[in-house]
Length: 69
Image (cartoon, rainbow, N blue to C red; front, top):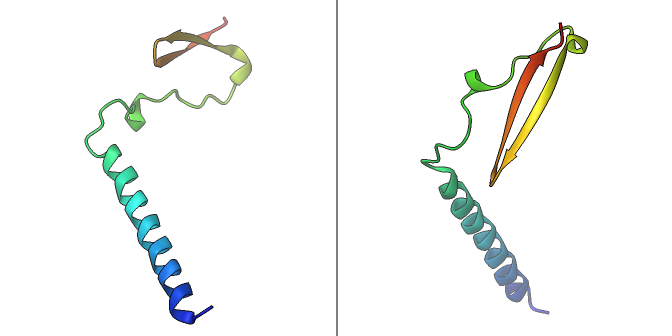
């Protein structure tokens, strides 16, 4: 095949990849449903003294870490 044909296919693939990347990145702009870093569960050195309880709701999962002692 002619080199121009392959170049056209390559350019179209690159443009489509960039367009999908921009579209997916724009979905995350302005979303407030992600937890901030300070709201995440702390890492505990003695993990055997704690248990994690998961409660599920529609579209949401709540994790609670409870001390066993």
